[in-house]
Length: 312
Image 1 (tube, helix red, strand yellow):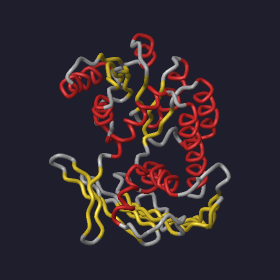
Image 2: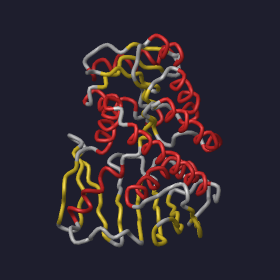
Image 3: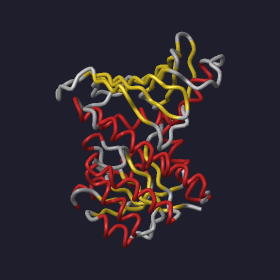
């Protein structure tokens, strides 16, 4: 059964992911049939390009409320700038739609609203997924380091290459690092961070490191998150667990993704594609336990996100 989705933020301005998410939605049989942008003129241009990419018409809107009332949709994909996320989530709740939302879920100033939003989605049985796909690549770590074992890690590191600088660099990237921690540890709402340190708090800093200790129902973990500005694709990225490091490699001609460690390399399917497929699968299967679990991960991630940013 083909599902119908609306897309908020169909363009590539400000590094938007709308077109990429739309293509992965189509691959998951979740057809993007309408989109809303900042103006009708821009939305029409972006939807015309989407129609070429997707192979079918995409109706253009400049008002999300009108799109939702006319679209006869199953889901909403939120790929717009962060300041519009909270209102869009509330509208999706009103119209009974499942939501895949670009990270972070809401702006930091609205973080106190996340628990109520999560509760509302859960109560309505509506799927809520945040675009944090890094846990999807963790099987590659096991392939590259088969002797690593299943013991809970003591040290977790990651490097990403956002396009911004200073605090915006952190706001844009931190959800990814927290999702990686969630993929490796039993993170829950009782987890706490201590000894939070920043290598720099210069608003123009283009290379910085965040470090902290994470405490929970596991031995204390030393976490380090490296961020270095990079405007050009492919952007360098790596992760390391207890010293076992793997670096990402992207072949831009066909966007093939692999991870390597010394002379070993393993190819992975696009983690965003896997996340989108999982989102569509949750809508179709209506597994309430998995829907609840996904929502709880978002709640716990938002809590740590706010706690860490408050230390800046």
